[in-house]
Length: 479
Image 1 (cartoon, rainbow, N blue to C red):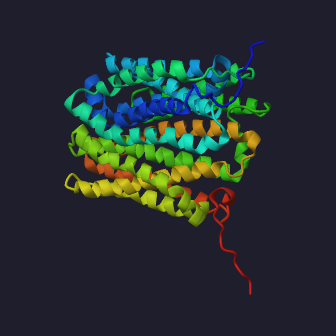
Image 2: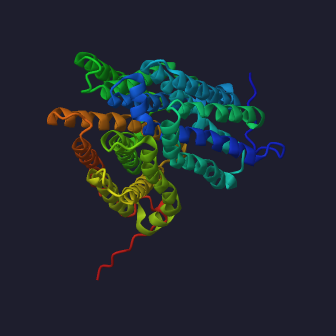
Image 3: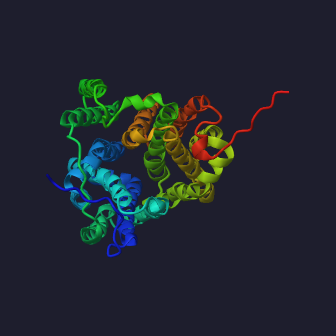
């Protein structure tokens, strides 16, 4: 029988700060890679001679691949060792970046993006596992803060860096820059990442295949709705196949003690609201800020990729500000009030993007996008925190897996939904998509689901999640 590694803090000869730097650098590479691509969509479309709206598949392929691979990340780390999986994932991510940079056609490019998604799905969960098993609990908060801040910085600088590389060099450099970063992280990781290996449960191959093929069929079927890239009967077959496979998976999961994707967790109200509202908000955010906004600025307004990135970075900068405010806001207002008010603010910010014109002062664009990013991040974090407020400790791992899969599906679905809305507006108005009015209508339509979350949020109790937020609602006195 194979011996399992002792899960004790690292010894002095394996400094924790080096381990944190390794994981932070990996997350930085992922963050900057994800945020750069949106500034290069028109350039990539021109290079591959495809409709720019088809670039939605670059996001759909990436996020769907992540959603499919996330449930097996913990099992892989226990089965093959944390160092092996972490460094292997980085190797695949780096090689996939090279494939994207050298892709001779759009289909090879999508294969590269899918491989990036699969490998990216392993990096953060395994990195988090490495940190948890490497240090005492008293160091958790500081360590996780240290490794997530660089990822946020990567998201902030990504649009401007991507815009610069696309404008003055070539869009392929968005992927080439991953090569030296990836090699450096792998080299240091092979030396300092510990060889933790646990005792994994039996691998549920049937469940993995059902959920994997089901999510893939659903995602790609939905993303192809209305874009004429596939025959209507093929799209319908894909979508229905995905529905059937997922229904079979969940029927089968009911008989299992701890399935990876467990719908029984939705019986907990705070978790149900957190996941459903979080899905909608993330979908709207991804569709707006990854797809519609960069396209409008470049295709509609005629901005260069650098000019576009110098505007859209403001939304990511709002993320960093939100991290400093979230604790105070939740303690002051509680989950119900904070989330409800912020849902209105965030929806209005997205709807107000319909007021942007080529003549709108840049400072006005940047200010609105900063507020939109701040609101969006506050909503993300508050919903994430609330999801675990009433979760039993024994179910936290399964709840985390379900939440992470939901996030990636939301991002994929959000981009596909935004593209579908834009295409429907184009078809209805019989005006080619470069018309700015099409984008304005799309922003308003996309903002509606975000506003609709308000009805679910208002159904929460005023003291929902008070043990986590620290908020004490005033007690009404009866005279």
